[in-house]
Amino acid sequence: MKAVKEYRALVDLVRWIDDHTAGIELPADERSQIAVGCFDVALEHQAAIAHLYSVQLYGSMLALLRVLAESMVRGLWLHSCATDKELTAFKKGRLDKTFGTLIAEYENVLRTPDGVLSQFKSSAWTQLNSFTHTGFLQVTRRHKPGRVESNYSDEDLCHAMGAAGALGLITACQLITIAGRHTLVPVFEEKMSEYASPK
Image (cartoon, rainbow, N blue to C red; front, top):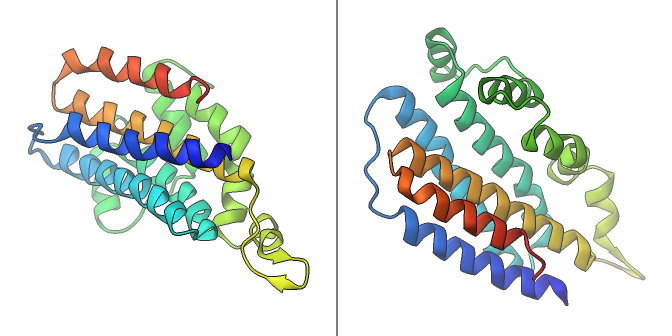
């Protein structure tokens, strides 16, 4: 099964990210701390996705992928785009922007409109919502002939773990950038290229 290989690659990647981000010194300003909190949550979700696969809790694993993406995108937007007023509103539990708007504003700052994150949203967002909010895609994968139980395709599981790996790499690269460890950026870019190669 390809999913088993994808799982092993994800576990190795989680360890690799931990090895390459452990002990980095991060800025103490409020904006950075809030963004780093988002990134840390995203990396925890990445590790949880690997663990949930290992214990065959596939529905929960797939549901968590959207949450990982949201954690990462919020961190990117809060660090690079949010005004002081928007940062204050976030601290009060308000973020009146859609996921698509956060991506668009972040990619505009980077001068890469319709970039990788927009493409990810365009290709995966409907499915992620269905898995997270117990929509049709999630429900239809709970049936086997004569039984109600997990019935996810190898392809579903591979895609989820591959996406979790890629999102985690983007997140970790942002952490090292915030930490000013720019010499590590090429190392992360090389790892991204390697991870995207067929396993």
